[in-house]
Length: 117
Image 1 (cartoon, one colour):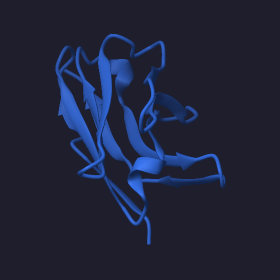
Image 2 (cartoon, one colour):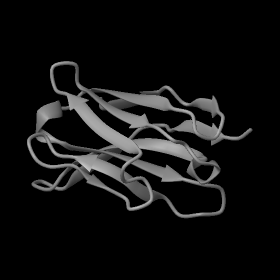
Image 3 (cartoon, rainbow, N blue to C red):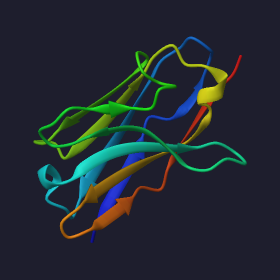
């Protein structure tokens, strides 16, 4: 049974930082592309950042230079370090695990991030 469990969300003031974690179980972690997505109220879910097991990272333009995605294959965990947070970063953040061959994907339950003074 596959589980992706996010943690680390919360309320933070503008300019602050948070680190999200996603612990995976039930998959061969280092064979999956891991990613973070977010969904704000009334908006579609959007890609924040992805990280292949051994390749380069990719970020949405809106978070480049502020967010950093990383993974620890020994701990089956992916992280999202978020700095210089803005109110527009407020959303539910979801962890995602994906493979292309065969095509399969999994989602976590989401963690709320609220940026407000």
